[in-house]
Image (cartoon, rainbow, N blue to C red):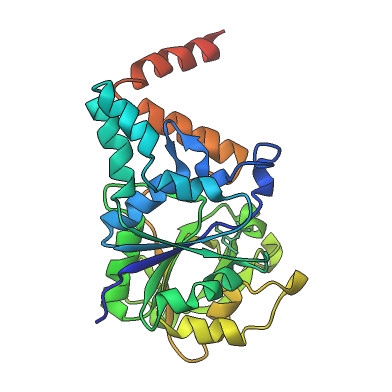
Length: 292
Ligand code: G1P
């Protein structure tokens, strides 16, 4: 079975749910404590065995490239001042993986973003990570998907049981009960993007992490553009499932959607509370707020 070596990160979106903060800054660079969200995702990918990170960028996203590059002046200054720990932190970022940047010239959907990376991914299975969802769990979320891929040899979509009232915020899948082999792994019969609660086939929502077989490229090329002429990854899965099995795997861990204001705040607080240098003080502060 081909090893999953590459991960595609579509990050060209506007981040409208975080406006006005995203007017001139990419949401992927917003910090959760002291690391940008996209660094958590790259670290998740690397900890899951990924060697090459393919970032599909767009206008206004240059700071992502700078973040994963060396910063000569900063490194020089930190070195001269003897700030060894900080120097290591900033230089290690550039060494995390091999980074490749592809530009998505127009925002024509997440499926279109993946097609922009077609030549770079080549003819092998790969991972796709959207820039919003970070999962706090000992075994990285992507590693869980890769293990499910290794069992099935099929494309795997990360799922979570969501609040049935929230189906219009997610892609929702219809599981095929005849294909149930183990508890968290579901064979998928159909996909529907953001249905109203009354039309949702289940409460299994798609979260932004996937492992896909190379056939997804043809499937996306064949998928009919949806509203606004967009090519959506979920429509690619509908197309792909005509020729291959597609599974969903219920991810273990606590997920934060950092693409919305509340999710970003929750992630920041939860990650800060776990830190020895910030946790006790923050806890005291939060308690004082609640008691006032
Ligand atoms: C995208 C996908 C959707 C998925 C979601 C997860 O939607 O289209 O199927 O559930 O990511 O984060 P977006 O949030 O980009 O509108």
